[in-house]
Image 1 (cartoon, helix red, strand yellow):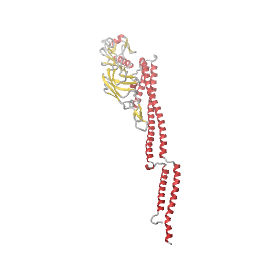
Image 2: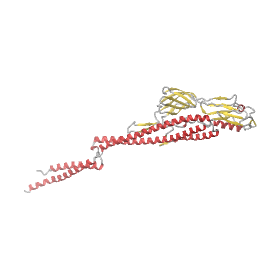
Image 3: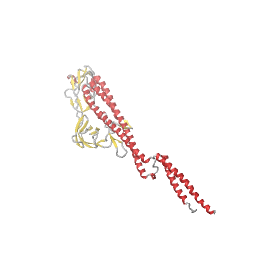
Image 4: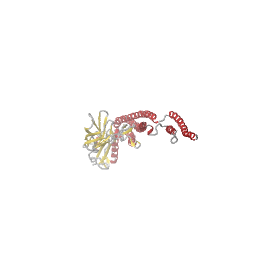
Length: 464
């Protein structure tokens, strides 16, 4: 027996330290609820759980991103719902004033309402925003730049127009119809009053001129008549008397003529008869050079150039004032990218084309005449079809995002369950382990006390 080193006590102390260490670890797990509190607890498990935690957090944020996308889509769709309602109202008015029971004053009142509705459609297309992002002015479509805006510039494009360079040549510049009269013959006005009367009919609308009307009165009647048929009236200089020249210009570009009929003597007396120059306007025209899909056709309507091809390809341009070659550079950037996944590249592209009145082709409507009202019905029908197509696409986007959210939530739930199995402590198991380690620690403490008492037995030998 030795007294310098108490080996049994050292062994008991060593075991007690190990028991206390296990007890401390169990207490830490019970207090934190985590099985892995330090990298040393499970090095491989820590690496796995950190990667899983990254995915769970990313999936949660992706789900919130998708919800934000739905809110944006609902904002745009709500605005288009109002545009739809206004277009339906315009069409209803066009059908109404196409009826022969309405006179020019009635149609003018209708045109005033249509003008206000078009202004509101323009305001919605330029002002509607989500988080300060314009939604309906083409800002969420592909960026496009013209190499020469004096020749042509972009108005709108369909979703099937890919990024690239689209080269074309503007062959015909759009012009306006004009009707330039000759000098008012001598004797038509005496003492600033017209010496003849009758009716003047311009493009189907007419006004009566009375003998004795002053030059200003005659000019005012003609000016109002021209305004009804969307035509401007100018004069070489006021007042309207002998020697002055009247000029009529159609306000719209394109293949529209100015037809003047009525009392022959009155037409001649105003300088609008023989010798007048009547020039019919031209629609813009262009030829495809390169970059366009095979079989692309080109049509001109006023200043608009519309390129169409298979797969609903449509590129709408506004021609300028100069003919010649020009290229439309369409970039891949511009559409809204919604990050709907936890990792790089997992996004969804949202494109909303320009839906301004010019893009819809409804800026040229004139319901002041019965012919114009008839044309407006077809124009509005096309605009309604375009708005319907965009709303349908937005609805498809929203349905997709709702399914995306369900999928993300399911993936997050399953990933979280796997993460929990590795990271979280099993409280029942840890409590049982705590009880075991606590008993062992108490036993170890007792045995250490017993081991420390053993050297005292040597005192009995020394006392003999």
